[in-house]
Image (cartoon, rainbow, N blue to C red):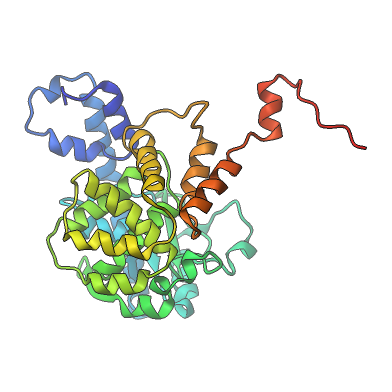
Length: 350
């Protein structure tokens, strides 16, 4: 820890890496002398408590659904923390996500309502009728959120309609597993790679965006052979191929993962969104604002970051995406009014 600046330590904790930092420096007596050591230890303790609560909630959910529905499929953090991380609490998670067969989702919800969970959302119930998960459920005593998924992405989004995430393909890629000796399903490693990368890119956040990166670092670091050809078949010409490539190429450039050289070449050939220049911009955004945690400013504001991230990955030609991004970045009238102190006038109507 002495080699890290205070701002870096705080950013690691804010991003959900406090427990990993605590584990990495556990044998370093100098680390304990840092004035920020209590912050790191506090993050580790908090993660242990919160992860334990979510693991217990998942166990209870699986228990009450056993014999009532087909085995639930664990998604995201509740699956990944046990599968890939040295200890579950090292992978922070905000809620418990499970995938149910569409016909059984209402049964799972009913069992959770009996346990004291309540639907809680700022959106009306009608919003979730065609959504990929039911209304989020919240337990007031345990403070645990649960999402019951019927699919991996919203069907009305392009990524949700792609081959990799079709109900048939997801069903084919479920793998029997256990959770505290109870039967569950998990996604195959191949579908995990595509799902983790796509979910990460689809909803990238500056704070916490590094967690999805580490998910793939730990998954690919296990050394198990993946069916890359199967992944290539899913991704050919898809939007998901863009998401997978931008994340894997970023991790590879930083030497955090290693695989056969032809993997990245094959992935690059299957995406249609960017060339080398576009990719450098996206990697630079990740470096500065997600990994290093730099604050947004006037040039790269939160708005502009979102525009660049979204527009440079659209399923269009690389040059078309650049032009789209430049057009989207033009100042809005509201911004001009704020910047000029209200002196900007709209053109007179004729």
